[in-house]
Image 1 (spheres, one colour):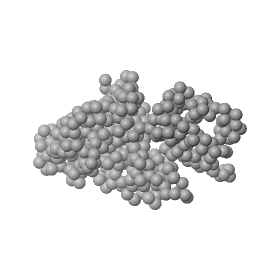
Image 2 (cartoon, rainbow, N blue to C red):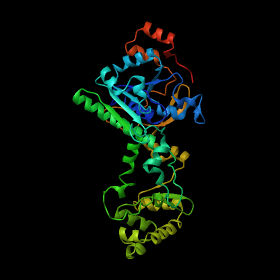
Image 3 (tube, rainbow, N blue to C red):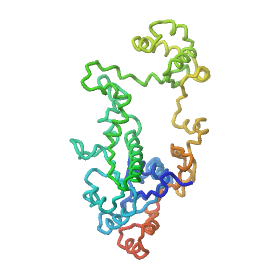
Image 4 (cartoon, rainbow, N blue to C red):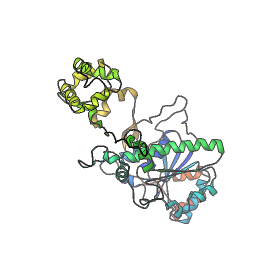
Length: 400
């Protein structure tokens, strides 16, 4: 079956993380994504400890479902090739710093002249205005500005901590892919393209606000800010390890009390019988719970929590994720053969469609692997393609 974005032509000018992940999501949904790289290639091709046979695992994940061509945009001929491709494209995605596309001669005003139906998606750190706009911005910078780095620790008491993943890059990638899809739908109604700008900071703030910044929703509110709370309480130590539980509804709390053999104590004690009472007596309440968890092994608690319908899970180490029975039952991890990297494992596209397909249609490409093929599809003659190769504007495929 074709993907939901089948027939959509995407030119991917991005590198590193947020942009490539965004474009790969479009590719997962069936778009024809052409990754246009400088002669030196995307920085993420560099390999390192996560590479095999010259294929880095992160690059393979972020650039699946794409074709690659090398185009030197520092030359007039290279710019002319891009212009001709833009005339036929549906979407172009870039994550340069603000102003770079304008200096290349491909700012929004120019792109609109080239192709009025084009969706031009710009991904950047903090937008084009403001005191930080000219800074170099990566994930840690956005975690710091947005408050993400304060989630794991109280800065007034101890050192803030970064979330140990490129959270803001990935949130931005997902946000950008959704915005591009919305712009494509709007184009179906109006016949016009538009400039879609997605900053990492906007994406992180939106992510933070529903729960972690809830105390700052109401302006000019004299009510003292409530405690921020802590998700540390979701991890409990057992007799021989750890387990995660998250009771929310009254029945789930009842089930937890039953599983921990605390029903009589907690339900009959006015200090713990309501959520407000438990919060007012939080320190004592948490001590009682923690002591109770440690009376049972993890295996015993799994059975007791399951029986009492408490939201819980054993806490997987990273290697254990691969063997989790639920992940296996869903088929959430796919295996396939990469022509250079060998056997690989990646998550399937998370959206499942009844009438269209999301899948890993292509492995990540070699640098410049599809240059001649792509140019032929975009209307370049064999003579033109040969001349571009001779001039070094288009670079032949380079084995990694």
